[in-house]
Amino acid sequence: MSSRASGRQIGPRPLLGLHGTKGEQTMQAGNAVSCNVAQWIGERVADVLSRTAAVG
Figure 1 (cartoon, rainbow, N blue to C red):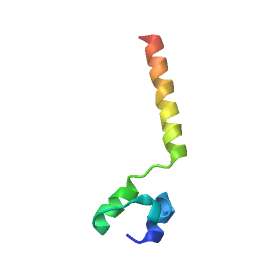
Figure 2: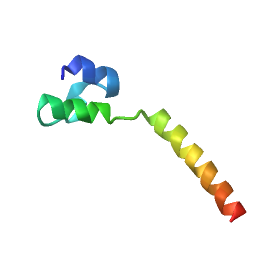
Figure 3: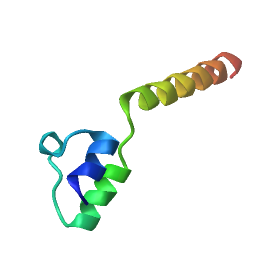
Figure 4: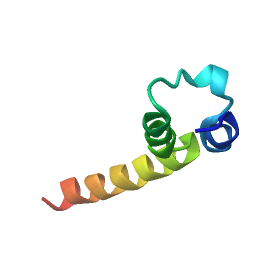
């Protein structure tokens, strides 16, 4: 994977610590979730869990 492609996804390559073959590096970049998306998902999950706990 080019550093340009990984940089678009999750930041500059020197800071990533990507290891392995190009295919493995592509998997690592593809599995990345930006912080704001992870926070949004976490907030939604917490909301659903709190509603479930209140009902049950």
